[in-house]
Each structure stands twice: as structure tokens, then as C-alpha cells.
Length: 527
Ligand code: FES
Image (cartoon, rainbow, N blue to C red; front, side, top):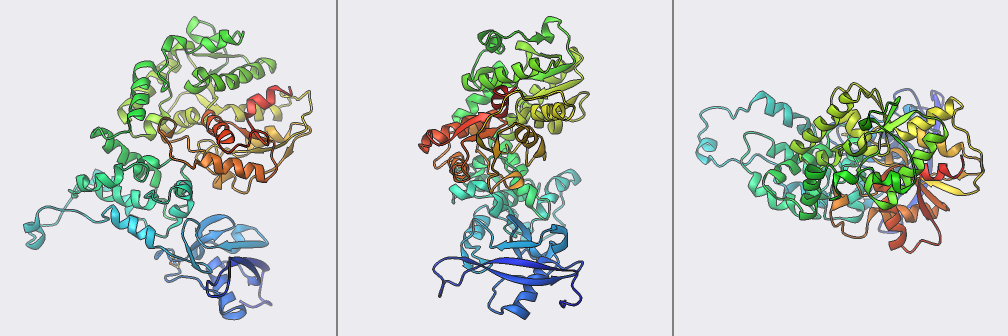
């Protein structure tokens, strides 16, 4: 590469740190000539060879196999040798060492703890038949179906990207993390392995084993080999449940889903009591009332006193814009998304069948959900469905586009938005909530540095709503981030985020600085 041949000159801001002379890391800038196909690794090697020989980085294969060139590129952990500079479409590229790892020097991080966890789950086939091992008479074969199950996990190159992406490790350094869980399942799921019992003590230990995964899916989203740490955690949890190794509070929530159709231990006949309590009148499909759209209210908005206010606000908005909608009343049952996330697949299937029967019975063609978790269950986990499903923010954003949702009042507030994992990262719905917020006159929107695909999880997914989460909580970090950007209101669009962030405002003592509202509540103040 030379300046004359360059298609573009790109500025690289690289985090530097030499422990022999620097007190703390700092950024240094370099200008690099870029042509089509130049990778981040090519650019870093150019800097090292032509501009600054002191830059330290790690690489080997230069073809996405060894995993040694992982680093944070414009806020996202990626392989430098697989990331093309021009495809990023940026004039300035910021490079940092992998987060969640100690920095040794410049872009070189210390993988000791990571590999200790890798070893802890015994990342190898465990066999008892020593005779067969030392005097093999045939190959160890496994059924094709089993092979298909574990094959995706064999692609892991231990680059550390999932570990750097994982929000849980920020606060819980002892958590095994996605790589170790994926490796554990790669062997536990292998029909030739006989080591499940040996691995269980490590995997069940709370809060370090499989139960701390929030299923936020940042690891899966960033993995260069499409390995799913989340799915491995869920699969391991299924094994734990089969063996009766589950937190008692989580077991109670699952039992309640089975008995009452909700995880909160509340009776089924009171599911729609919130409607009367708020003096609302809403069509009910189960009372032979017909409507164009079915609003799937969800368990938490139906039963939790705080989130019932969100349900009330959303009902009023829908009525104000003349949406012809109805609900499934007391027949609505838990969507099962969290039963799936904790690995209780039998229960998930029952809840899925119950809801699908309801949608069929009442001839439902279009559904909106309050919760991203219900949206995800219907969209991604119910298989082929015969109805269209949207999260309510998508529906309202469409109404804005059609000119049917107008705002009559101004609200002068500085707000930020916290992306719920099950709406953002998992379903890539980033713009609809922002469109609603940005259309409200007087609002000053401040994005938090960790947003969209790198948004910080509230720690409500993966069954953690019903487990005693050790402090500090991720919600507390999130509240601090919101206060740092000057937000007076943190807007959310998920019942779990609302509960967790509101708790975090209290535990961080930030009640006088910031409050948490669902977008529906905020919106109901201005239409
Ligand atoms: Fe081997 Fe990038 S240098 S993966």
C-alpha cells in the first residue's frame, strides 16, 4: 500500500499502553492508506512496519482460523484479519484491546483466566473404556443426528470475542462465559462422551455456571464462526433440569407457568383484572367480540402493579388512534419464552400449543405484543405461524409513517433509550422505538455509548427475573451510563427492563437524577 495508490486515507485511533512507562492507556492516531480489500490487520501491520514499530499486536494465520487477532473495532469485538476497512464505511476507526481481558500491552490481552475456564469444563472427550482407548478395535462413531447437534460448537476458535462481548463478565468475573459453556456442550452433547457428571458441579454452580447467562445473545451476534454460547447455556440448562438441579425460585416460576399460565404465582382468573382496575373497556375475543388486531398483553403487564401502568398507557394510545383491537382475556397464557430460555422445553411446547390453539380458535391474523420476549417467542420459537406479529413499537412507528399517530403536546426532556436484548440484538428492531421518541416534539435524545448491538443487558432474560442476582447488577451500570449522558428519563420497551432499571435507579440512589418509563407511558403523556 502506498499513499499514491490509496483509495482512501483512514485515521486509526489505537489504544496504546506500555506498562513499563504508561500509568494508564491512551489513544494515538495514525493515517493509513487503504485500498479495496485492506483488512484492519493489514492496516495495523502497515502502521507497525511504516509508522510506529512499537505497536504490539497478536496475529498468526491471517485467515480467520487461529483466533489470535481478535480486538475491539469501533466498539465491537471482531477478528482484525476478517474485517475490511472500507466495509466499515468510517473515516476514523477506533481500535482497542478485547474488553473483559486484562491488557498486557497495546492490543495484546492476557487469556489466562479465559483458558482456565476452558480447562475447568474439561474440553475433551471423557471415556471410561480404557481398554478400548489403548487397544482400539474400531472407531468411536456417533449417530448423524448427534453429530449435527454438536457440530456447530466444534467451529469455535477460542478467539475470545464472545467473552469480550459478554455483559455478565463485566460484573461477575467468575462466570464461565460463552466459550467455556459452548465447549462444555460440545462434549456433553457428544454421544461418545461419558463425562457429564464430572462437569455438572462446575456448570451448575451459581453464579458462575450456566445459570448466570442472561441469553442476551451478544456473544452469538459477534461470534465470527456463528457459535451460539446462548444455545449451549440453554442446552446445558435442559440437562440440569432433567437432573433436578435448578434454583428453587426458578422452579417455582416454572411451576406457576404450568399451573396458572404465568410465572408470577398469580391465578389465571385474574389475568385481565387490571382492565377494570383502570376503568378501561377493551374488546375480548374470548367473549365473542371481534377485532382486527389481537394485543397479546403478556404475563408481567397483566399482573405486575408497576407494569400494569404500561398496559393501561398502551391501551389508551391504541384507543386514541382508533385501532380496532382486542385481547385474549383470561385465556391468554404465558408465551413460554423464558421457559425455553431456562431449558424447560416440555413446558415451552405446552405453552406454545396452548397459545397457538387460542390464535386459531379466535381466528387471529395479526398480533402485537407489549413484551419483546413474547414477540421473540412467536416470531422465532413457535415455528410456522399463521399470523403476523409485531412488537408494539413497530406498530406505533408504522402509524407515525402513515400519519395516524400525532403528538399534540410538547415535552422538554433529555431522554435516552435502553435497547431490550429481545427486541434489539435478537430481532434487530433498533429504529422503530427511536422513530417514536425522535418524533416527540421538545425531546432531546441522547444515545448511550453502549447501544443497539452492543447495548448493555438489564439482566432480566434467561430466567434471571426469578433468581437472586448477585450485586452489582447490570441495571446499575446502565443507570450510571444514562446519567453520564445527561438523561432525565431512561425509556424502555420491555417489562423486564422497566422493573430492573427502576430497581437500579433506587439501589444507585439516582432517584433525583433520572427516572425510567416505558415508551408507551411516555407517549401517553403527549398524544
Ligand atoms: Fe488468525 Fe486473524 S490472524 S484469526
